[in-house]
Each structure stands twice: as C-alpha cells, then as structure tokens.
Length: 273
Image (cartoon, rainbow, N blue to C red; front, side, top):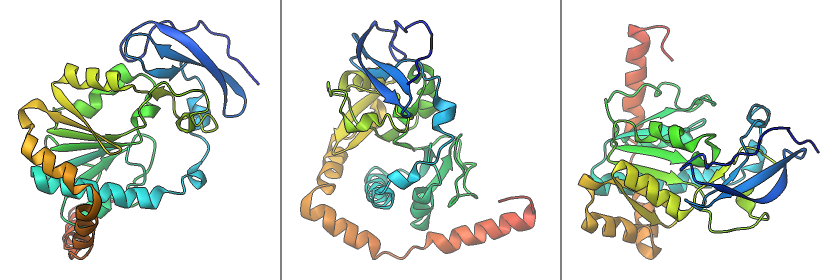
C-alpha cells in the first residue's frame, strides 16, 4: 500500500464546508486513500485525487456488464421526456463512445455528444452542435468523476439549458462497503447528498426532482407540474412497458437523414468525420 504525503484537505470541493474523516480504502488496490464527509452539504469525497491519470489509463469496461441495458433504458426515458416537454436539442456531456447519442438521433432527436476523455465511436459526426443552447443536457454516471465539482459543474449548466438529466448514486450515509465507491477503479471520487443536489439546483435557478434513479433539474421558468406528473407516470408499470413497445415499433427515420447529412458534409469538407 502507498500513501501520498500531502496536507489533509479541510474544505469541501463543492461547498467549501469543513470536512471530517470517515474511513480509508485501498484505491486501485495500492493507494491508501482517506474519505471525508462534508459537515455542511453532507457529501462524501476522497482526498484530492492525485491518482486519476493512473485510474483512466486502464480500461475497466469489462466490469460494466450492464452498459447496453442501461443505454436502452436511458434512451426510453429521454425519448419520453423530450416528447412530453417538447425538448428538441440535446447535448450529452461525458457520453463516452455514445451509442446513446446515435440511438436518439435514429429517432430524430437532435442529440450531440462531447467527452474530454473518450472517443465517440458511434457518434463521430455529431460532436459539434448545430444549436446555440441545448434544451436538455445529459450527464449519465459523470458527476461522481469530477475532481472539483464547484467549478466543474458550471459546464453542465452553461447557457442555462431548460433541463438537465443526471444519473449518479446519492450518498445517504452509506459505509465503506458501499458498492458505488468502486475503489478498484479509482474513478469515483465525489458522492453527492440530497442536500448537495438541492443546493446545486437552488444556486443555479433550477428545481430538483428525483424520479426513479434519475436526477432531473428543471429551470424554474420551465416547470410544468402537469407535464412532470405525466412524465413520472410514464416511467412506471404497465404504461412504461406499453410506451417502450410503441417506441420500438416506430421506424427509425433519423438514420437515413443523418446518412444524407454526413454524405453532404464529406462532399463539402473531405476532412470531416
């Protein structure tokens, strides 16, 4: 085991509250890392993550055996959300290879993807949005990776999108055996409490909604209790199964449109993806 000699942090990286040590875990199997609880926002966080370059140098995708099913579930939720609230332009931040982006485009939802650390294998032609401001920003399993949430979160709220749809497991006083800590990967370094999420929403003029396993931020001038109620109902029981069935029977008309668009870009710019 190794421990880096450094001054222990005393302020939360999200709210600047005081920190109290909770437990230590072996990160990447060799770094003995201290985890802290913020006394103000009640979030859990590691000590400053000096091991991230090492953590991201290793491909751990073989452990993510639920990736395809999660992609399809997210697709259904986004599709329903967009049609209920009339959201047209989407930006998926931290989208990885982004099969999700292409899946949405197949059904004529104008989604683009951006990721600083991964190549969008499935969506190479859709990394530069054709809109000024997104209606909906997506961030699935991204926020727990942010080294400094206070400034890092600004890029997700940049240009004040109507909504943000986020997934990350919420910290509710779990112990050192919490599965979501995943110390073997070394990539999960910040864990938000419900209070922290409420503070993030309040500071930026959004309403926070926790729906199933999704965290939905709605800009306050876009809140519609009626539509939100319909959205919540659509994610449950028989209605959810019926909608999934109906959506999958729809023709993927966006495939041909995107093909023609990419061919046109190739002709106008041979260097384009």
